[in-house]
Amino acid sequence: MAEQGEPRTFRVSIPGEARFLKAVRDFFKPILREPLGEQSEMVILALDECCTNMLKYHAACRAGRNIDIEAVLDERRVQLRVLDFCHRDDISKIQPRELSDVRPGGLGTHFVQSIMDDVSFEPRSDHAGRVDLVLEKTL
Amino acid sequence: MLTIDSQNSPSHRTISARGELDLETAPELLNAIRAAIRDAPGVHVDLSGVEYVDSSGIAVLIQGYKLARNQSITYRLRDPSPQVMAVIELSQLEDFFEFERTDGGSS
Image (cartoon, rainbow over the protein chains, first blue to last red):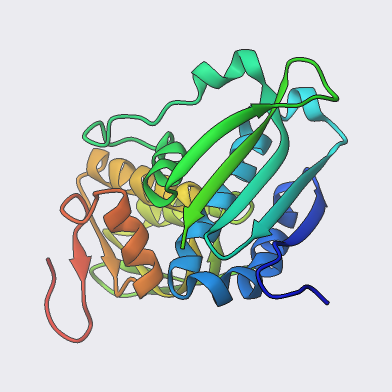
């Protein structure tokens, strides 16, 4: 059992298919509810949007591979890490659209940036050119 | 999982969605909205039973609005649940859609 103050880590891995997105939401719902309260619903939305983004835009290079997510909770923050999110060359393509330009698509990135306190990409040491997407919410 | 029911009245078809509206299920709602726009004089989308919506679901609601506008028929969102309304507000679309509240009035 984790000692008080020690970070707690949770991991889930799902097949890269839309029908498993609900499984990610259901897995993290009770985990994030405790530190974040009602805010947890929006943080789960942000995480869901990241997984959706992977499925919609990075599926071709990930065919047959799982989506792996790690959550680290400590006294100060909730950190969600979507492992091997994309290639570093694709980061510049991930942009929110202007909300005044009402059209389908492009909202997911806006949601993530609005909901989370910090969004960043971290290079993977085991996979040249690939990055993890790291979302943080301060408590 | 998403469940969709339809009910016709002389002035419109009400499409009632229940469950979770995401990348997997949003196309089902879009198909129902497309059929209603083709066959009915107006479309009301009842969102009172939608427990979760993401950007894919919001995109379908926008598509429905634009398809209805192109056909010059009414298109309203009825009784969005608190979660749906929170995401509509996050999208800054609360003044874009026309809403109907069964506890009184439309906006």
